[in-house]
Image (tube, helix red, strand yellow):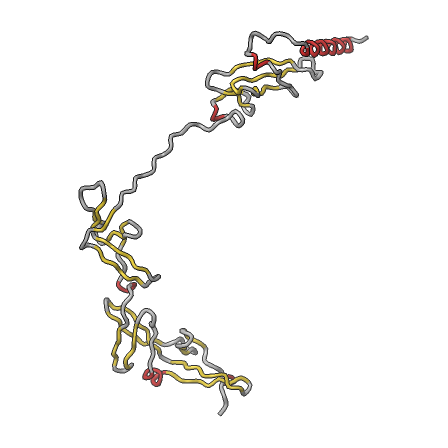
Length: 273
């Protein structure tokens, strides 16, 4: 029998003896707590692993004979630490992955205290704003907040927006809603301007600048379309409405019905006399 075969036979014999010894009931190892060694942990490969019943302990599996039989050794981590399999060492719990790891204890950040504020009577104005969207907002030159003994003011030119609770510039005059105002212009007649009617017209301006086209399709009457060489636009100048004449680019005419400059109908689209 060769030396290698003899060593293998001895190893197998030792393994069988060890298994038989492990199966025989007897006193626990006095070096470790009973729950650490009983029941015995199972080794399936070499390495170090956290103890399934106490993460502050770990065990090492060693196959001395390389025959699939493992010797088991137990170790205890330093107080306050656990064994991390992925790091192969004892670490603080927040550095280890589950099941032994745990998040660090943190103190929750206190939420900032909300201090209610109100506008000082006599310093607030409510604006009816039309642009960019219809909304009402209240702006105050001074506000009074609880827990403060003095009133607060925004930087020069700014007011306190009560809706957003911060300093902001007040709305511009051109962005405010205004009641419909009649504008009398001798050559245009009487035009009515408002944010809902920025391109007004009346019978006088229609007769003066516009032409009505009768439209037909294959001899069938389709209706009329009024197109204008000149149209009028309303704009704000301070607190007043003003009007100015405009014209489309060459080749286009303005349609009040469509609210834009359009291509005039072709001869084929017009009704024949």
